Length: 374
Image 1 (cartoon, rainbow, N blue to C red):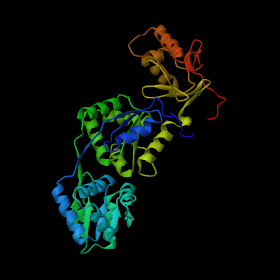
Image 2: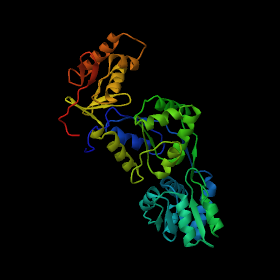
Image 3: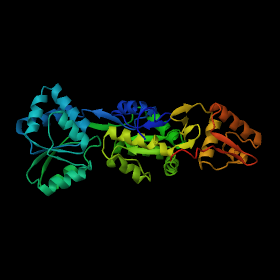
Image 4: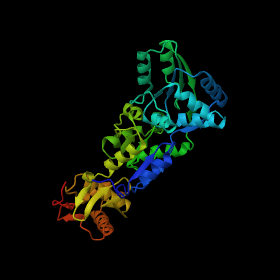
């Protein structure tokens, strides 16, 4: 499948990020997805700006042996703060004389955007890899400036200090409470109720916070069950972001490269893959969390029709009896005529296209196009 056009039409996707949430939502929306945003955490910028500027002035005056950049947003915020204080050019000049270490591709990209080249990049995006690399190389007596990520110090400074180094921590921003806590609580309840096709995470603290909210709301088990059944796709931008999800029993999609563009492409390939569609003479049928598409065009189907299609596509081509359809239809009717009416209205939604067929005296099934390639 070529990922062009509205291949995510009818797909409901939840974005849990605050940073670059608009960019992510726009990229997914261009492919037809309906995107909701519920930021699991907020970002508090420029914590103790006076101390940050004092460390910056010392770095400009004395330089450091090593500067560790852990996040792109943190480094950019540091430069912005320095620029506002008239120290921007001097800081960049000082960094050209310093050994630079980046924690992952985002930190490397931020350095490169400032005209700087990192001496080494931790491809695993973990501070543990940075500690192992620097301590193995030797840090005895070295002054090492560490720009922390939003969760603060994660033990990197302690490891460097124990190896004889002299680390100095820079706190540029911290993760704070979500801007709309009720939206986050509603998002976990909706996810557990099957309202989303996918949930997307871009930071480990964000994924951990969203999972904690799901625990608090008592719906984490339902979310895990949906992922195990293949009814909910969970995607993480990189292995560090994925770790809290794995610890909760969720196996997330993780792109080969830890960037938003790669994350979007991975979701497109997963959710828009033609191999996941049910082939009918009328086209490729997809049953989403809250919508139905035929060849990537949304079909207006009622909740009853959606329930019928879920039952019929659970095993494509298998016959589903009227009694079985009654068990999944809204309400508590035991009248077979109720199932017949639901199927008739579903057929009306498809405007006569051959999607559902009747098997006399047995029930209904999806009309499969056996001549189409798999």
